[in-house]
Image (cartoon, rainbow, N blue to C red):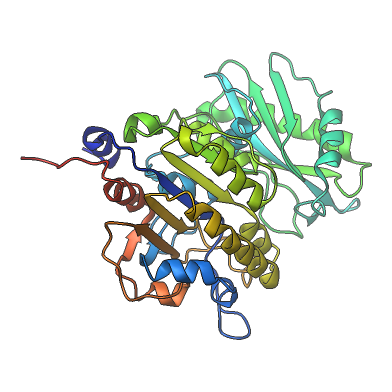
Length: 401
């Protein structure tokens, strides 16, 4: 019996509510003063909460493994990311409300900047063009036609777009075109198994036509594709845990992973405070709330230590509004680490805080990486978070006689 089946067997009804606050890319590395972004931030509300909580460190996938956002969130929701592998394209497509059928192959697209002479990538995000500019470029790419293939393309946010190709015989198991660095050319899509050869040919044909359309644009005169995949069909979150759940997120990709798990997505504004207001407005209607903060990760990827500190401090100011609702279980953590020092995701463990009335409080009095090393939770996995949340919410019955 795996963990999903165990949760499905043990969950029971309760009126207790769970809030999972995920600060994307929360984990960091020490800056010039020896403190991480979280340790450098002024977080009086999280620190006060820590005094009434149990804390620790959590590993998203496995020691030493750097997770993408998809696997990191899957693990937070209790789905083993080594068993359930989901391409980023599926999440982007679902995040903007596009449906996927068994014939569909989805990809996440990034507009990028290419050197006009050499065609090497000079900026993987095309200067973070606006969503409005992205929509204009997507509209141009809608003219691409390929025989016997239905094509849907839609802007997502900033420089990102979602692409869906539908035809008989399409399969995943494909490489990506983004080399994940500048100074080199975009890569061709290659099949990882023979059955994917048709899919690779179709996608490479689409890319070739896209480059021709974009060649005179600036700064977005190219694009890359990532996470080319099909919908894997996750077990429903509500079926597994017996929870009526909702997601409060501002970025489409995180709405997508919530929808993939069967959560309802409730719309919120772009600010953390607007997300708190959305939480309040929907408090009576759900048992479980996935509350996502994106800009900690964006700042980390940009190498902006101070901006990441600012986002953490802004999140801290939202804590009293969440606690005023009296959640029975309140969890604060991240999906993965994104240290500004690395400008990328990393393998480092995540600080995690559990607040509930029936916990054994530890002696930790602040929320930070080094403080959490001393916490009573010790070192856990993201996969352990939902079972613990269910237990603290008194939503699990006894296992065995």
